[in-house]
Image (cartoon, rainbow, N blue to C red; front, side, top):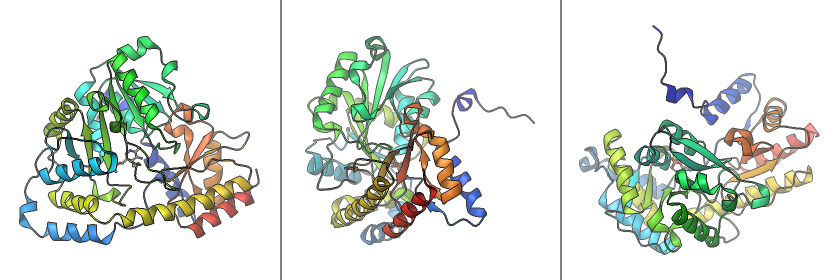
Length: 388
Ligand SMILES: *Cc1c(COP(=O)(O)O)cnc(C)c1O
């Protein structure tokens, strides 16, 4: 039998991190001691009080039935209260909040609700690959907004062709940013709202990293600024904040029509997140936030070790103010792929090539701070041994 995959899949590159895992495993099989700074997956366990909440909830037969499509009312109320507390954003838990099976799920499904075949969508490059691929799966055409060092890795809104902006149905922004670790301020978000109004487009904000920040910095939410609720939807997640990537729990907050459109798609495809996981999410959002502060203190130390080590090798990187990524320019004469391959094959260090996040990421590699300080020091030593 010759099973031809659908054209929509033929448009997509292999999922970046699946490919990197494959290469890592190949080198590991040769007996190399791998230091994995590849995928952005926290290395620490989920805090105990969250695990306890899951265990108790899972023992209650009330959680064993199909969940509500939009999520448990209580989880949505707690999410709305958290947005109010953390960002001063008011959201109606019934109409302006929806539970997701991880934010990737929501981000990936969202274009199915608003993109018709041929529609344009403004997406950043370099970027989390899902923005691009979900637009393609919906039959739309992604138009890349390059994020460059000169612009602080913020899209240059003035540089977008107004005719393209008028045709575009949506724009994706992601701050604090993966992979560049750049942050946005309220002034940028105000300009995004004005741009969205001028060109009549939807703003999709991915805010997965607002809680992972250093030196006392508190990243804002897009929804904080005047008018954002009229034009946008923001995706958030418990994955990075509470070391819950495996649990699959996220949420979207925003304009009621946009939440409703996403909910309509989801009701046809999935049946919601396990209620016991949502109960654990309630414990996470309502509980003591010391665990988040402790985690950030740990990442901040790791950041300092890696950034100082790279600087000694002549690789100058500003200290990230948020996220657990270090976005590092390649040494002279290396492409992203060359440098990544050399780090893997000669130093046993897994990184992600910047070019894997899109054309504009060429010339960089991304280090994820997902190993302890001692291992990071070892990584820096191995790098020094390479000599470039
Ligand atoms: C990790 C990450 C997410 C979160 O994904 P979940 O599906 O919630 O685990 C979303 N956006 C970006 C940019 C990320 O790096």
